[in-house]
Length: 404
Length: 96
Image (cartoon, rainbow over all chains, first blue to last red; front, side, top):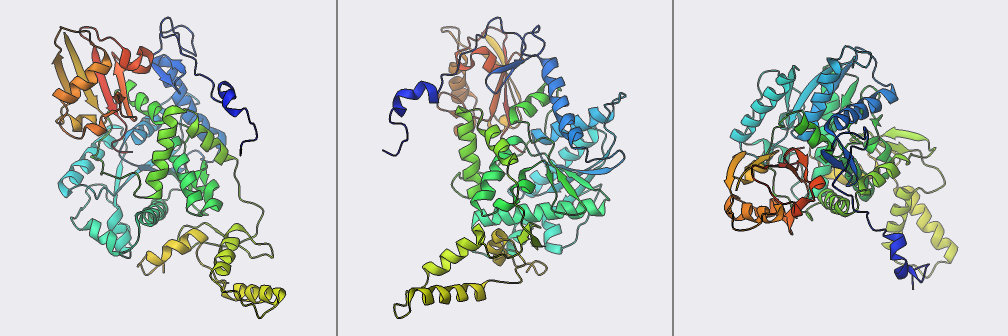
């Protein structure tokens, strides 16, 4: 009934074409057409080890090179997170820096590990920090350690190259800056924003103009849909694009955003790299919007391998319109638009909400009713709005002095 | 039939924190990789089977390599295990 095409069900073949089964025998590498392939990407592209590794390195450098943002000798902060993507990132950097050809990477990476593994015991965390230090120094980089909990609670960032003081009460300290009844979605969002802000502060302290984060395509896709769910649509280009321009001094770059987990994992396996592993917390898929979106995407990706790339590529086409920017959000540095006569989606939402909460006054004429509600709407909107739409919802849960 | 089974990327945490197992499989039957998965679950897996298996295969997020080759090129669960095969399970769920 709702379908435009009544014969939809008969057109199954057209809409859901059968995936052609690949003949596994006599299969040759997609690139060199000679060697026997060892890895199958996207369920269809087979590569031999050499072509796969060359392709991965090329993809990494191409994205960094194409944008021409980083200049030679720039200091670039690398945000290390435990897992396959960071290990692959360190290897990409080390092998790029050690080259003697014109393709050599010429910037100066500064590695930082922002520790936030509160779901583990202090002993486990100390062990992980030691392993991380060992891994980073194996790649001949200097490690910088920062405690996320201390940075947030003391509002002071201490960078250590030797040791990190970890406390049993780090988790409670973090919880103490948030109101008790905050839900998981908002809590995650607050912590994500604080994490980003701390990374930017660290970059400024260490004289870095760029930060590289190890987000993969699936993280980008998850972030994109999460942002839309949380009313942060206007921030999609900055939050999921190659470069986050929100801070005027420090830009965040995501050179792994076109890689998927299988690629980085195989990159590590073929280079004999073993990433540090962490016991993962038990997270219920319905506990927050972020985990739900992540579950939705990974589930869909399993059956339709183009899911993530489709979301990412669609996101790349999104840009904020030609509105006049009045200010930046105090919490996330997202844009706050200048008011115009035309209602944008944020104001429309607020207007609807106001209207739905009003009782109709039948004593007034239609026009008067409209003027009355319009007057009420105009007078109750915050002219000195300091937060973007999304952060105005979550800022009330934060008890920190400097953000409220 | 002797084979080696290895775990990495955090999958070893489910298997008594051991990365390497020399396994002797009973020879009275043909061994497909799918059958091996359930044998591992019954004999070596120490905790939380849902983090290793889903339906009749490994959980999405666990990569399998047979003799250093992606199992997707080897017909996945239908692959017939040969003596001295080396099978590696890499988790991508731990960390990152």
